[in-house]
Image (cartoon, rainbow, N blue to C red; front, side, top):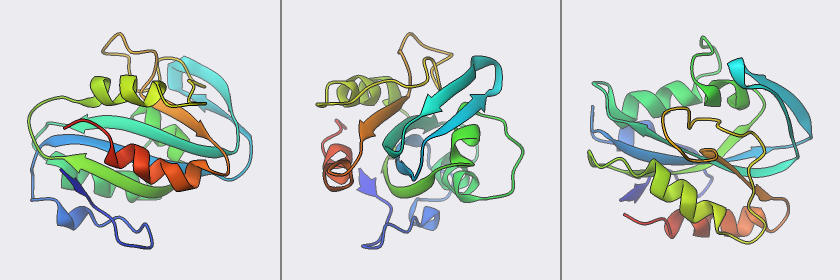
Length: 155
């Protein structure tokens, strides 16, 4: 398990093995409250603060391709997270390079954190029973412990 960022929080997808499959968690910040319409899920109000999105990249492009796509500003809005990333800044990322799909395990663990909550039901979780794969962590101190949350996710 690795964190693919430097001390400035800059993500380096090239640090992932080319085409390596795996699970990832994006720590993101939304600077001001915004209402975002996410495809068929409809509109949700996103408070300013920190969020973690968990996903998997088990296809042919693997983690490097998926993370590079998430970083791109110009892209067709395809996945639920694409709609959020129009308004969010990626602060840090954690990856697990294995074929084991850990996104639901990570989402459940994140939801147990103090103050964590779902703001957009079923976002990123339309193929499972999780309430959401996007978890709101809060403001202020969330910046400090958000990275600790990522470090504590099970392998």
